[in-house]
Every structure is written in structure tokens, then in C-alpha cells.
Length: 100
Image (cartoon, rainbow, N blue to C red; front, side, top):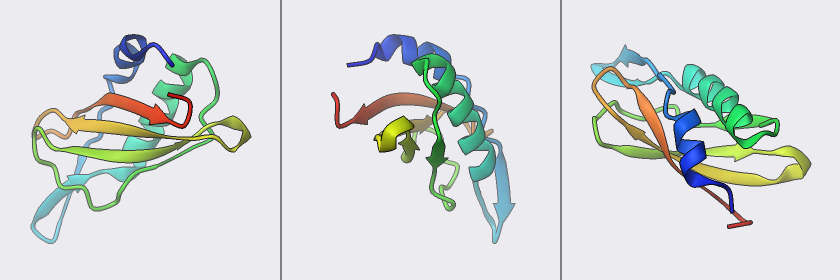
């Protein structure tokens, strides 16, 4: 099992930014995926090959959502993120996978 607290320290800086469309504000998926990939690669000490987050996540402080994280050798994990505020800043609150 990975050091959950070390992961949180490194990955809690994801700034997702928000996009407004059709009257609703949603997470900027591209920026969230890029920031999460970079932060997790650094905190896990291994290259994250891809991250997939939902494209329709509304910005609601306190809400959580999950992203698929692809690691080397085909391994996949799930990152649970929490929206911290109306500016769409998010924090990783859990990383789970088949090796927990």
C-alpha cells in the first residue's frame, strides 16, 4: 500500500479551473487530467501514463468525483478528488487500486 499521506501532500495542489457552458460551471477536464498526471507521477515515483476524468463534473464545493489513472504495465487505479471551492480547486483524497 502506498503512503497515503505522502500522496496527499504532493497531489493536493491540483487547480482544475472552471469552464462555464449552458449555464453551468464544470471542471476543466484537460487541465485537471494534466495536473493530476504530473502530481501523481511525482508523488508515486513512477510515470502515470494517462488520466481520464469525467467531462461533465459540476463545480460544487465539497463534491467528489473519480478519475481513472493508468500506470505502467497496464495497471489501473482510481483517484478520488474533492472540489475544495467555487474556483474549482481540487485535492486528491484517495487513490485505490488492485494492490491495496
